[in-house]
Length: 136
Image (cartoon, rainbow, N blue to C red; front, side, top):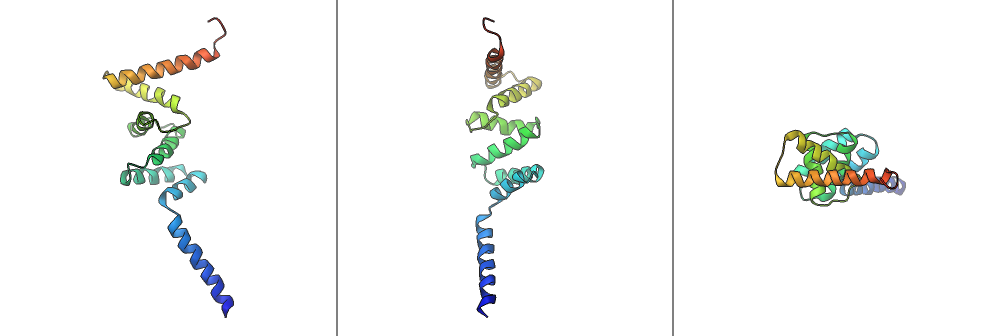
């Protein structure tokens, strides 16, 4: 009789830990890992609406947007947040270019837009000089 209770008890404990430890953010990580980026994106977007102070959510969502080649206003807004608050991001320099292109298309001429466009141009020039032959 005790053999029946042991497996049921273990299953109950695992289920309780699964519910407690498996947060929506961890579920998003699992979806990303499984290649289901659209579902992870939707989950992360809703989590950000509920918890805009969670910086790690911006990075995860920016990574999905970047890999999906999203350049719409929603994606650019997340990219701007990454750059503005200096959140660690593997393609930070590329984000400057994406944001700058968006500002140019919008025709923005405000100080912040010009500063970011200049920064994107400088980063691109620095990158190009890296590959230029010596003396050029």
